[in-house]
Length: 418
Image 1 (tube, one colour):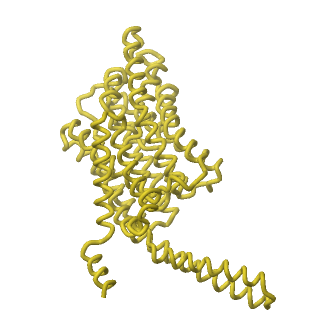
Image 2 (cartoon, one colour):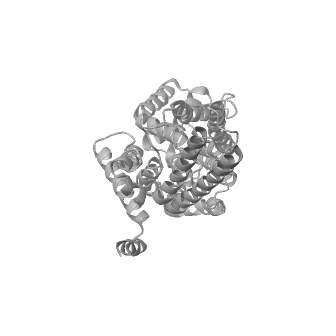
C-alpha cells in the first residue's frame, strides 16, 4: 500500500515542484546574502553556488535519493540501464573464461548489448521528460530577460539615425567574433563541427551585454556617437544572432521542444520592443534583472558535476573566450569598421564584456535541454563568474579612460573627424 500512497502524493504535488522551490529559495537567499555583503556579481555568483549545492556534486552525494527525485535524474530507469550494462560485461568475461561455441556466445552478447541500448534510450527519454519543467522555467525566464533588458531605443536622439549602421556593425562583431572563437576552441578540443554543443556555446557567448549597470553607462553616455541608443541597438543585433545559434542547436539535436522554442523566440522578437517601451522606465527594467539572474544561474549550475571531470582545458578555453572574446568583438567592431578612435572603441569594448542575463539564460537553457555538455556549460559559467567578479576593476578602468579622454579632448570624434 505504501507505494500506491506515495504515487498518489506525487500526483498531487510533483517532485519537480519541490526541486524548483528549493532551487529558487537557495538562489535568491544566497544572492541576497552576497549582495548584503557587497560581493561583486552577487546575483550570478549566488545562483551558481545554489545550483552547485543542490546539484550532483553536493546534494547528489549527501542525499542521492532526494537529489534524483527532486531534479529529474530518473533513478529507476538509470539503474535498469546500468544493470543491463553490467550483464553485458559479466557475459563477456564469462565467455572469455569458458570454452563455448563462439557463434552462440556472440549472439548472446549482441542480444544483451541491444537490451542495454534499449534501456539507455528509455532512461534518456525519462530524463528529458522529468527535466521538462526545469527547461520550461529556464525558457520563460529567458523570455523575461529579453523584455527586462530594455531593448527599445529611446526616442528623440538626433544622432540615432546616423548611428544605426555603426550599431549594427558593433552588434555583429560583438556576437560573431566570440562565437567564432568558441567554435575554433571547441573544434581544437575535439568537439564535432556544428554539433548541438558547439552551436549552444556559440549562442551563449554571442548574447549582447545590455542592460548596462550605471558604472558602464555613464562613461559612454556622451562619448559614443548615438549615445546609449547605439549600444541598445547593438545588443538587439547580437541577441538576434545568439537566438539563431541557440535555435540551430535545438534543431540539430532534434530536441522535441525545438519548434516551441523557435516560435517563442520569434514572438519575443516581435513583441519585445513595444513591450519594453510600455515599461516606460529604464529603472524598472533594470530592477528586474537581479530577480532573473539568480534562478537562471542556479538552473544552469544544478546540472554540473564539479568534482569528477578532470578535463580543465575546455573550462579554461571557454572562460577566456567568454571574457576576452567579447571584449575583442566590442573593441574591434567599434574601431575598425565602426570608425571610432581607439580610446573610445576600447571603452565600448569594456562595456561589451558584461555577461548579461542573456548569456546566463542561454547556458541554463542549453544545459536543461541537454544540448550543452556539463563540461562546456561549466566553462561558460566560469566565464560568467570571472566577468561578474572582476566587474569593479573593469568599470573603474573604463571610467578612468573616459575622464582621461575628457581632459585631453579626445572625445567622440571618428577617425576621419566629424
